[in-house]
Length: 176
Image 1 (cartoon, one colour):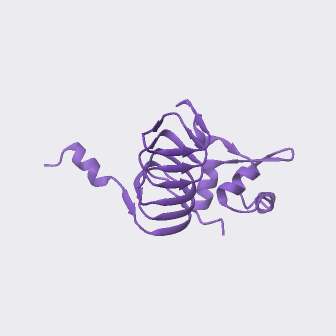
Image 2: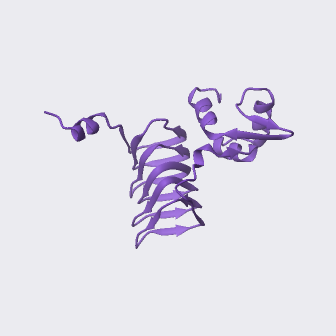
Image 3: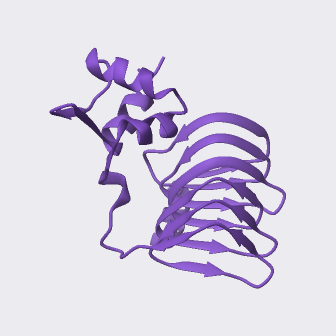
């Protein structure tokens, strides 16, 4: 007979990546993701993310619960908690309501401590923010927004983009 805990484990989504990958990875559903290889690009997760000791990640990372033991070059935003454990090496800025840096971990950047009430996923992005997030030129953001191809709102001359709508747009493959 399966207990409630066993049933939850059975339906838990686990992805263990020990490969070299490049691009934009966006997870809409919670997943337990572990990266042991190399990754370059943009990583947006829900659930828990573990960057293993052998991992080398050159990416901006957004997630809920993030643990880093490997090397990360890029900004990290954790909406719940961020742990840097030995022998982690993080070069970039971090934002999290709860931060733990263990002895032996190296962090080179700035840290912004958020209140748990801050919901970073709903904050509006500027065209420059969006260009960095999508790894495209800013003029392409304006071109797509002005043509109605990109979901955003315009107030006067200023464009604003909601992260959730952009993530949905990317997941639907409309970024081509």
